Image 1 (tube, one colour):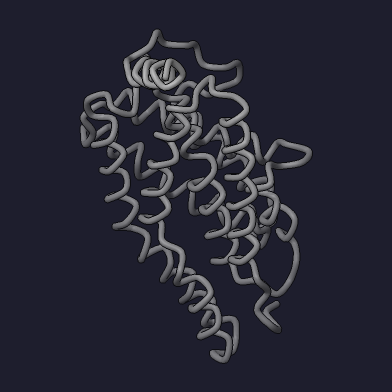
Image 2: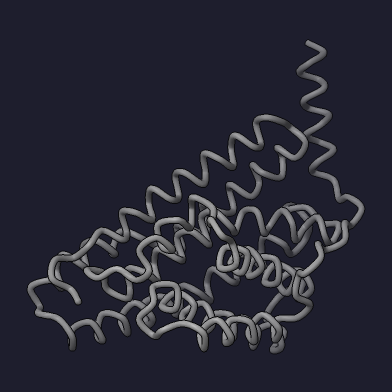
Length: 251
């Protein structure tokens, strides 16, 4: 049973704090810089572009998190800040990529197509960013700061962000639906509501936290880690395609 002892020892080692690793080249250094990049993306895209729909909502949430960091809401402001920087960097990488990760591919492939409501693009972006990118970002932020997901304050602050996002989710969702009601026949309101109602930011972030802990444990365990990430990409992409199902006759 020496193999089992080796596995237990490896897992135990990964649960202990490690030496911090430097951020990769190009990682932004402040939340203000993240906000500025999102504003630049918004300026460069047509208002009806599907990526622009997600970007506007993400910008609003990022500004809210920035304000809460400044207000002292979090136990470990350095961790929340670093997580915000790493997390946003994964979105920017998708924007800049010639071929985005399969998790993001449905949004980028349909961004200019008719038949979809703005909220569908917004939720498809949230699906890709939270379900795929967030677990990766949690692991990277912990490694950069020499922390683990079990370090004091890490999960508590993650949950505080959950609560913050949950408080604005319904407001954001309703603003999209109210705007849609002004543009299309109510015939399509029911099908659209049914399509998007099954996606929850709270459930997505709960799943992302679990996947972050799995990824943390799988560090250095190949090919299992790579296989896990590939499966995650494909699964998230499949959900994204579902969220982007065309609604008949939408402009």
